[in-house]
Image 1 (spheres, rainbow, N blue to C red):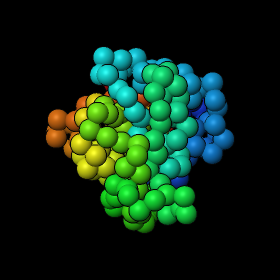
Image 2 (spheres, rainbow, N blue to C red; image 1 turned 135 degrees about the vertical axis):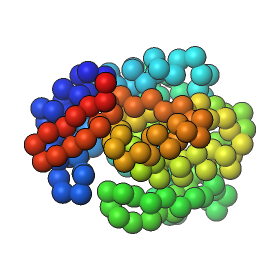
Image 3 (tube, rainbow, N blue to C red; image 1 turned 45 degrees about the horizontal axis):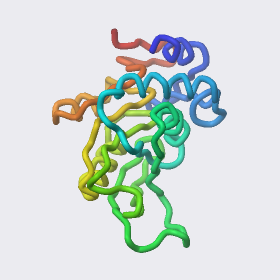
Length: 190
């Protein structure tokens, strides 16, 4: 998605540790119109898959997942990283490692919201090592639902998480794939 690449080049900042900061439009301050445009593109890419639910992990993935789900006219389900008093004990659960935060989370989804009748599209803001998507894939598998594939706004191609998922036969469609980053440049995959 050329518009996303242009926004990354204009507003993104590369931080130490191969962290790309895009908080001005994607995951801190949200450009709602642009998120909806990205959601439309994700919906176009997966239009033929019969998606019934979009699944993401809280919190940064929720906005783009909502944009995609709105375009597809289906619900968004998000895996919670923290136990809450209004979530019953009947949940699907898996461990996920966060590259950005350097920590492991046990994420959960209520069994009320994923079922064998669902076809699930995974959506997130970033794809680096693929651990978040692997956790979501595990939740889909536990539920017996079908996996349509995964879409991320920004994939760090040099970290190979997306490639590893594709090698497993999982359809991954990222809107922008970065081949390399330095303090002063970002190179996109053609």
